[in-house]
Image (cartoon, rainbow, N blue to C red; front, side, top):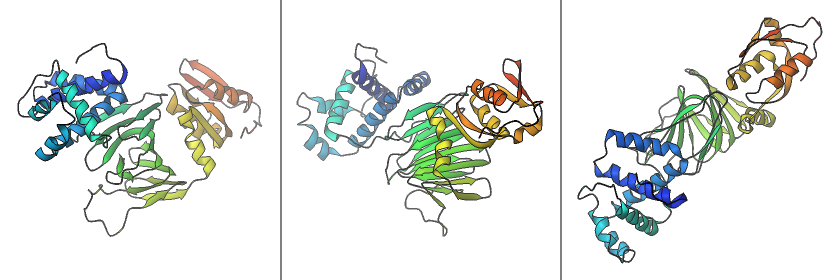
Length: 354
């Protein structure tokens, strides 16, 4: 693609235009498509620019001759209409693509702020985080996704729904409302459907999924999501409201109310924190292991029943080890760089730090 002297939105708009023309020309090679997918992953702005041009161009080409002649001539005093109407009737190599940029500008000016949704033929866009990483992604429709540690998901928008396939990890979804295109997260053996809401999904395992709603309403179902207009099952799927949590596996869905403080603690990772309140040491270690390569090993299993509380930076185990040593009297032995052995203290009455 062209690497001119443009900067900011102008350069990104130009690049998106050139990619649109290349892919629409039928001349794109496998290497071209690979470079296009890499360009999409570089920035959410790239994805938004391309999605907008793709959507507006798709609408332009289906509006018919009357709309083109009636609305576009006045917006095209320099003769751009002929170039617009010629697109699709003959293939053009888009290596210079200056006319494509001009066409895209005319389309955007006439159609205005249309809903930004990628073409369903486009491949799903993957997002991943490593151990201890946190990433916030802005999606083309205005929704955002916060990815927690070791998370992998695929984003695919179609003309019927906005779909996220969660493969592992945990994410929080702040969904932009759009009743005609539900926002669906497929995870484990079920799916979560929302219109405009905030909710978190965690794959505790491939057979166990947790869903917590902080705002709005979501539906949780084991069945495949039916397309709009399809007949509904006799029993509607269970719904979750703000302050509720569902856990489902292969056979069952269980719903419970969640205290406000518990919701806040569960979402503390979005601020880079881990908050525990009267948690067992075994539970604390399991949670800490999600954010670090360092392994904490209980040399004495009974230590796992000790209770503690506190706020810690995710991925930083030294503060926790200090609490274990000074607060609970546990012996901490760093036997290897990433292995810490925890032994029971000789003090028969360690303190509870909750």
